[in-house]
Amino acid sequence: MNTALITFMVVINLASAFVIFKVLSNIELKNKLILVAIGEIVMYVILFVVYGISSAGANETIVNSSRQIILFTLLPINIICIELPIMLTLKKLQQGDIDNNKFKRRMSIFLIIGIIILILEFNYIRDIQTGISNFISNSNYINNIE
Image (cartoon, rainbow, N blue to C red):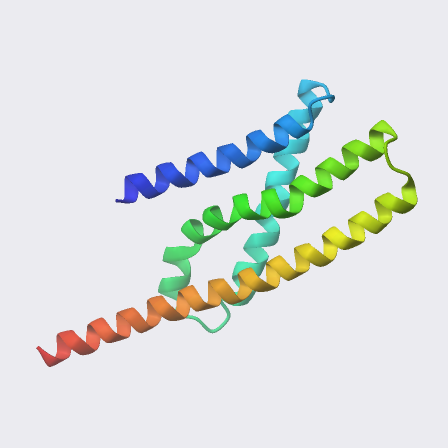
């Protein structure tokens, strides 16, 4: 089960990176790789901060044991929903397809959407940690009864 889950997480993370890579088709390979890497790192750091904030007051064991699975499951969602539209807009700006005003307007919209997604993920992470804590508490209760 763990191997299947880890394999799935690796595949979806690679797929999201590949999508960004393909979107940046007119950029030279070196710059494309740098942009993809920077985007992945920025999304990971933002998600790590959201995870840390949502974990305040949670059981430390649960927080530490679930961190990487939750982060690497949500990372491709952030990349596709937040980073991809930003990269597409940057590409259009660079090619001259949109002007600065339209670029600023789109970036404002993406910022608002990104904040909404991060708030939803904050609540989702907190719910996961609460669910794990409740499961452990119920398991301990059942074991004490037997």
